[in-house]
Amino acid sequence: MENQEITTHLNQRFGDAMQHSPPDAWQVETPDFRLLVLLSTDRSWLRLLIPIVPANAAQPYFSQILEANFDLTQEVRYALHQNVLWGVFQYELASLTAVRFEAAISRLLGMKQEGIDPFFNALVEQQIRQIILAAKQQGQSLEETMQTLDRLYSEGLMGNLDDSSEYKQQILAAWQRQLERLWMEED
Image 1 (cartoon, helix red, strand yellow):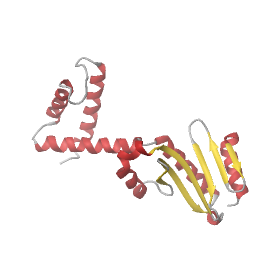
Image 2 (cartoon, one colour):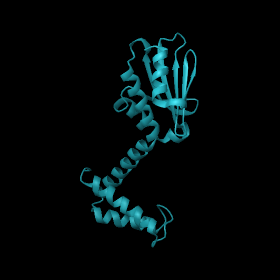
Image 3 (spheres, one colour):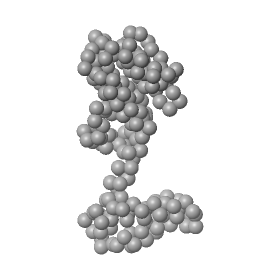
Image 4 (cartoon, helix red, strand yellow):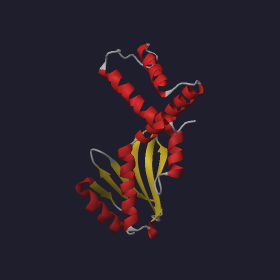
């Protein structure tokens, strides 16, 4: 892929949001994201970068993020630099195709859009599974586990929620859905 092809693809996809700093840098900036396109010093490698969240926001999920790099991210990766969690794609410029370039941009934009939500959700699911396992080890049924959770909320151990609040009912309904979804999977 040549520099002009990079400029053309970025311009077609992002229009006026694309800025080019010849000969080796491009930037796309919108209200939703900032995408950096850089060539290596010797101009043989291309790197696409998109900041996702500050590193301190991602820190509780580093284990899940590393697992995602191994299992899910395909040609893009999560990386830390300058206290920021980035989405990164690196590829040898000579063998880079337009299809691969466009796919990498799409994957990075997807990573940005998801943020750290998938990692938060995975951590929550892991903790729910631990609650289920503990409840089953104590011989509790699903209904008894829900009663325990209701009591813990009522006593303020899991948050200060008024017993009659609609918010508490929504939280308990969410617990019910998750417990029902995962109950049979845990032994």
